[in-house]
Image (cartoon, rainbow, N blue to C red):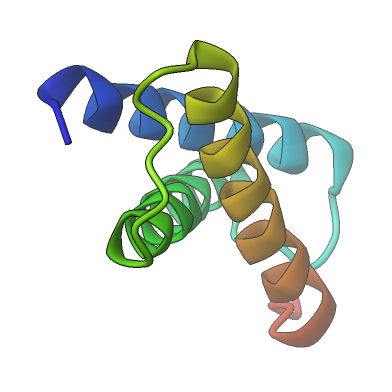
Length: 86
């Protein structure tokens, strides 16, 4: 893993969190909370693939799609199952 890959994961998580915070108004933690959750999901999904021996080093598209899907999944599950009332 390189530092550039890590920052790609963070950027993909921020974008996914921003998109989720913009689209889903109810049941979230707000824009900032969704962006933080997106970054955590992005890093978790990408790190899990690295632990499994799958590396997206060679393709930029794969190194953006995997963290974006992980971030989206984390935000989706938070909104569906652990929504904040208020």
